[in-house]
Image (cartoon, rainbow, N blue to C red; front, top):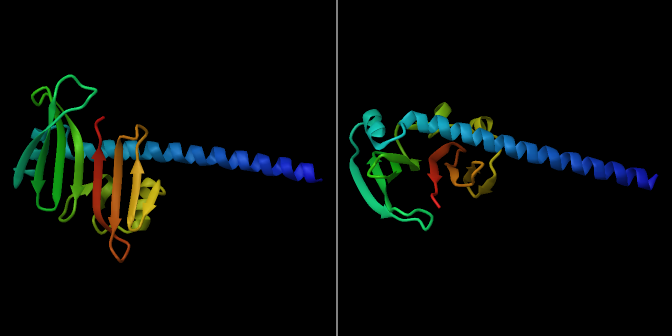
Length: 169
């Protein structure tokens, strides 16, 4: 009898562990799709961002180097009221991709109308449970591990800031 219980418990543990890794993969895929949908809202280049949002209040460029790339490139940061959009820019602007989108005020949103003021529960329905919870911050990452979503919440449990950061290695 004890051996049957042990085998059943071991089988149950293996099934639950497999279910957990399937859920983690599904969550990573949800994050990937969500990031693609969010990127589509703003466009793939600085010109697209400016076309959609208008001229920024401020534009900054900073040089960026990576030990994995032969050529240096820059990070372009466009600042709007309550919104910051940064892009990696390579080959004199011919190749650009997002470094960070951060929303702290105003009407800007991420994909699927995830905006400031959205209840924590709705965010959970859109992206699933967070990979990491720290104080009032929920974090998600994609399959590569280079893209992270971070959401902070106000005292009422509504999204306060939205941040997507893509780290180049």
